[in-house]
Image (cartoon, rainbow, N blue to C red; front, side, top):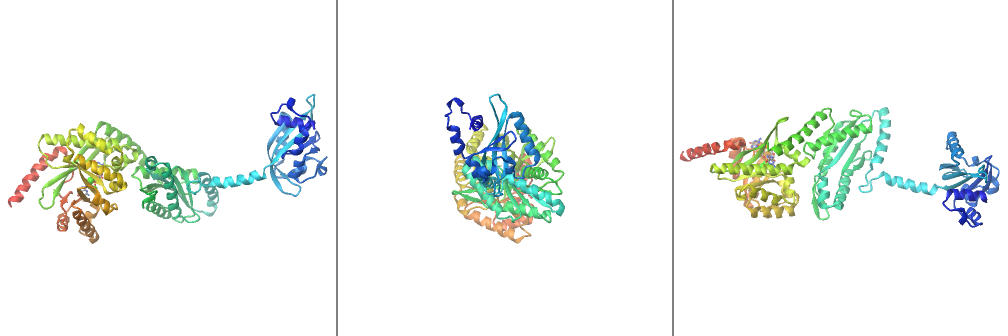
Amino acid sequence: MVLVEQAFIKNSAISISKFPKDLPEKVFTKVSEGIMVTDLQKRIVHVNPAFELVTGYDREEVLGLSPKVLQSGIHAQDFYQKMWEKMNTDGEWSGEIWNRRKNGEIYPEWLNITAITDDKGIVRNYCGIFSDLTDRKSSEDELKKMALTDSLTGASNRYDFTERMQQLIKTSKKYELSHALLFLDLDRFKQINDSLGHDMGDLLLMNVADRIKGLLKNKDILARYGGDEFVVALTAIKHPREAANMAEKIIEVLETPFQLAGEEIYISTSIGISLYPIDGMTLDDMLRKADKAMYFAKQNGRNQYCFYFEDLKTASKRLVLMEAELRKAIENRSFNMHYQPKVDISTQQVTGFESLIRWESEKLGVVSPAEFIPFAEETGLIISLSEAIIESVCRDFVELNSKNSLNVPISINISSLHFQQANFVASLKAIFEKMNCRPSFFELELTEHTIMENVAETTVKLHELRDLGFSIAVDDFGTGYSSLSYLSRFPIDQLKVDGSFVKEIVSIKENEFVVDAIINLAHSLRLTVVAEGVETTEQVELLEELGCDMIQGYIYSKAMAVEELPAFIEIWNIKQQERASI
Ligand code: C2E
Ligand code: CA
Ligand code: CA
């Protein structure tokens, strides 16, 4: 037993002085690890009961035989060669090895072999101690299965997705298959996570995954790729159109608000698409390109999809440049405000001016606010931009009033993201105090989407704004889905019919019906109605017939620089007097 004792001690931290004499014998017979001792010629000289149990061989059957009797045939010869090389240099080896039981079954074991030396340090025997890994292996399989799915959403995880895609790509060349990769990133997910908490964020991700799963066919793969990133692989597609259709469907299916734990949550997604094999022959290539396209979709205003295209680099460069230019513009106030009149349809009097930002960048030329305002919202620049805009409008107002030329309110467009800030009302109040302006001379334009996003908070804020003296107009009305009951409870003064209805109001009957309905609705709520984007006299006549109160549009004037306003007002008044005298 001294051999086993030596091996045992070598394999454990127990010191020999504390070792009871009969312990090795007891350990030898009782342990669940199989133990096998050979002589220098590698003939088996001892085995323990656990050895018999694991291998199925009786002690008598194997004594004198080579351990090769247990070899499974799985390992190549150099495996054993390396094992013995290590034995000869280090005196021990341990590792996972597949062996064969007497009944032919192959099983994995963890084997530790130690060279046993005599008093003079000369190797006399080898001792192998092994444990059966079969059970552990099957639970590892279980773990592996668990490791393939994303535990939160039940979609595949990154590992599984990579394996499956690589497998797919391997066979695709031979069969000339095409695939599309859709890379999705939820818009403003971080905001939801931060404001409503991670539990709500998780709940939202689960629901998003469920809605997307509902759109996919069996052969398609949905995987969660990171926090709020998902990838969808559409396999064996016949035309890129299929990818575009799917992207549209995903965007649409996420448009319906989520009802989670009593809250109504809105989310949208930006999607980038790459195609196999046109855009890339490897998964890495496809992922990289789909990601780039997604980034572009996001920078370009979110809630849309974009295919990868070669000029993406130049397009992305423009966005990088725009961010830097916009930062500079905010810092240096190198933008200015223009003003477009609102005209009373029956009296033809100017009843107000809407302020609209104008920006000409040194490096990009004139950039439309329809492009850079959503971009500023995406990049987080909007808050400082929005505050700078409000200050500029106040400054212009003070300037105009010093010449005593303005006696109608000025409207200011308020970015959705700015309005949603917890300190929005306070920040607005601070600016107006600093600029020495009375809020009652101003009107705030909030889009229908903005006020319907978080109804409870909106109500509080609108009342606070009203208390400060501001009037409120609902902008782009008709493009969202207002709840009438809220609309009647919000303290608002004006609805602005979205220009898209006005544009074809004369030629498309449905548009006339919509505008008619909005006007009736507004009047029953005691709100005034402004039609925007009016360009022709036919439109004015029809709008007047429908009972619209005010008109805004190129038919009267484009937005003008502040210096042009006094002259405009003067000429307008002269024309008014002429009209009155006719
Ligand atoms: P909006 O608030 O709906 O502004 C009306 C847009 O229609 C303006 O475009 C205006 O110039 C344009 N418009 C006015 N009359 C006509 C017309 O007869 N025909 C046509 N085709 N267009 C007309 P603009 O200035 O390019 O602004 C686009 C959008 O950018 C605005 O839509 C608003 O959402 C945003 N925006 C503009 N200025 C500001 C600002 O100072 N702050 C914020 N937060 N957003 C702004
Ligand atoms: Ca507006
Ligand atoms: Ca509008």
